[in-house]
Image (cartoon, rainbow over all chains, first blue to last red; front, side, top):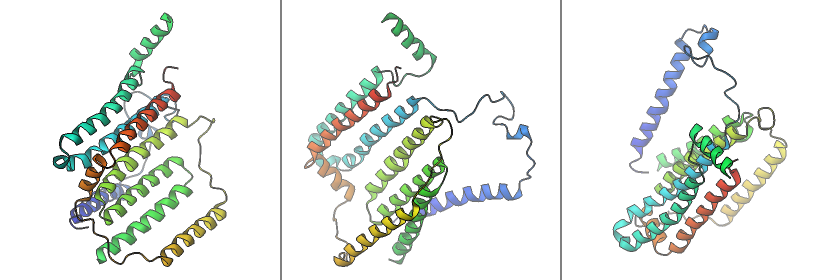
Length: 131
Length: 164
């Protein structure tokens, strides 16, 4: 646990600063809410519908893909630390690992998981009409 | 030494408290936030055991990745059954009995076979050792892991069917 004191001080400072700021504004701030103040955007478009409606499953897919590539990146750390000892053999093994996973990346890309917005939807409709 | 003991008991309190909050809070989203705190506390335990790599992975994958996935799972499935899903905990007493029995089992195992008084020394840098082992002795499982992750990726895309 040597050398972690700085990290602990940093965490304490971060949490403490946030807590003090929110606590002070709760204690000292005036509380007289009006409907305008409670609206999500005080000026601008009035909000339409509920913010808590269901989201598209695409968000979940992106999170899933993120996690898998996160694991991939996690394997970079120990390899990078032992880089000099492993030499070219380690490099080739890691590149193989990445190549296998890049097949998945290409698959995801070609399946249109990474396409968002009206353009992607229009493209899919056109493809369905053509089929 | 006392710093370590103090940190351990602090982390233990944090872990037990946040884990209980995960199980007992009604709001699913609050439960996820408590889960994030519990996973971060686990990273602190790994740091105490001088497993820096594991702590970093715990933060990166569990507190970062898994929590994100659970949040998206809630956001995607909310209103699926018509109204907000709230967590209900039934049979808390039975669960407490099972948990106490498990605790007794673990404690009796530790008492029966006492732990080594001194920490076994690892010698070299742990992260470096892991890197060397993964790339030499365990290189086949390492490459097979890529295939497994590829299957998970394709399976997720296939089952979610974004084309429909």
